[in-house]
Image 1 (spheres, rainbow, N blue to C red):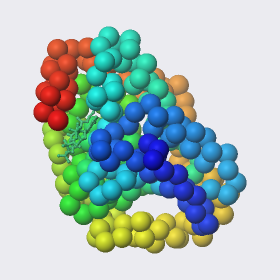
Image 2: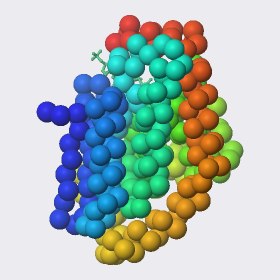
Image 3: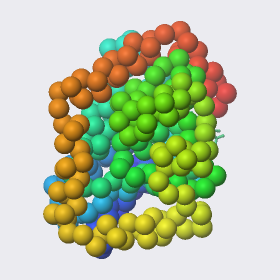
Length: 254
Ligand SMILES: CC[C@@H](C(=O)O)C(=O)SCCNC(=O)CCNC(=O)[C@H](O)C(C)(C)COP(=O)(O)OP(=O)(O)OC[C@H]1O[C@@H](n2cnc3c(N)ncnc32)[C@H](O)[C@@H]1OP(=O)(O)O
């Protein structure tokens, strides 16, 4: 079974599922490449209307970067290469000209929260936990997540979430405005389909036009500079002793 599952349904939804349950759907280079390819396809297609990103199983949406695979990146230059690769993919997800949804089927941690933040809508299974916990690993968001969070949430809400670096319930994140719909959990795919059905009634041209109007403000040098400077900051912290120790502690425990 591959690292991702891709399904395109008759209604025009593309379902991108990270399929690495044994690693709580952590993102490695294989997932990155597949996501990049899928976003390109969604952008070009005159049939695809909406992209939904989710995780396999019901434990995790995504546990962020694959710490076992990226732990060997020590120098900031090595870390920057990986962080910029995924940051570039999340920038194209943020600005793709079709609506996107993070279907949060379970825990979202670290880069998993950044992936969800890049999407237009976040629908979450009740009871799931979300953690922008990068601070506890001695780093900051490395894939542009803070820059996107500050664009999408009120300033103090976004700052609070990042500075706490704690797990928060999706119910609290709903109150904060980060989660848009709480799902009961029996069949979240079906619940997601129902929520999307009014959007699917529109033509691809209408969806494209509204989405382009929404993301135009992020297609400029000033925004891109902020986005990629966040990635540089994270790469510098990546080589700190605090980060080394935090990752080693997690991997030794597992
Ligand atoms: C790199 C970019 C950076 C960013 O920009 O934010 C990041 O994303 S840093 C990564 C941040 N992520 C984490 O720190 C999450 C680490 N994982 C966890 O805290 C927990 O696994 C969990 C997600 C809360 C789930 O807990 P639980 O259900 O109890 O599962 P286990 O902890 O026992 O994990 C099962 C299995 O999966 C492996 N695993 C989990 N997450 C990762 C990961 N991010 N990378 C690699 N591997 C991961 C874990 O090691 C276990 O493996 P085995 O022991 O071999 O079963």
